[in-house]
Length: 82
Image (cartoon, rainbow, N blue to C red; front, side):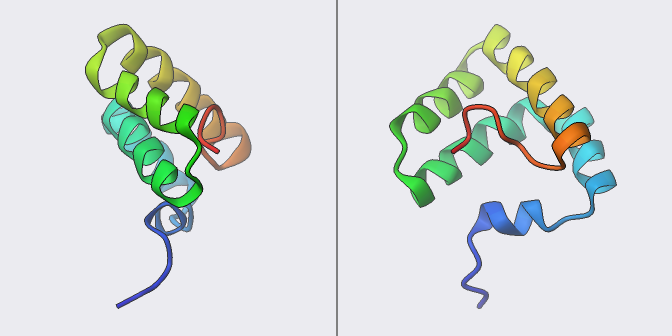
């Protein structure tokens, strides 16, 4: 079994794969990514944003757009994810 954190496994995907995933599943991925990131960093803001992303429509849409932009420009989900 690989001891690499799940978020690092996602980050190691090719950029085009992450962009395609973000286009089709971005809202879901953004919330789950942040919750998993919280387990790694213990940053409570990351957890709250992850939960809000998953349970609210507008939060889900906003995070989807932000994550898509950061994947394109920085090749990584960065906003409220550390």
